[in-house]
Image (cartoon, rainbow, N blue to C red):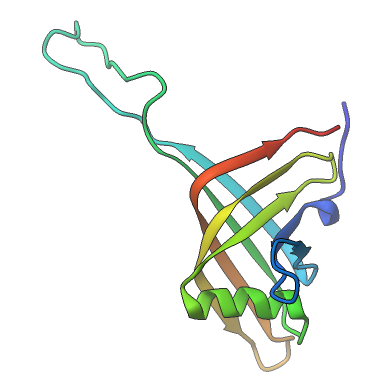
Length: 138
């Protein structure tokens, strides 16, 4: 079974200098991707005490997150800019295994913090909007 290094699991955001091109936010020391499929429950009194859900129905959503140490890199400034503008932006996650996800997202949270004897850090969360494109590893 193939394995991949965590450093190859990269969050990408639209390059403001070259729209339509995704660039990695390589300052992240940690990235996450979580997906959910909400269901539509149609259970009623005639369901024989068993839950019934509709097939091919409900809402699919992805959430991505990242955290790392602050510096003045452009891709991180794109994340901050997208947060401040509240705009939907193209984002992606690429794995060291070669598969990837791309979708429009809104940066819903952006945080900066620092303890006295530590580097200034950041974290963010982005939530998907619309269709999600998955590309399997070649």
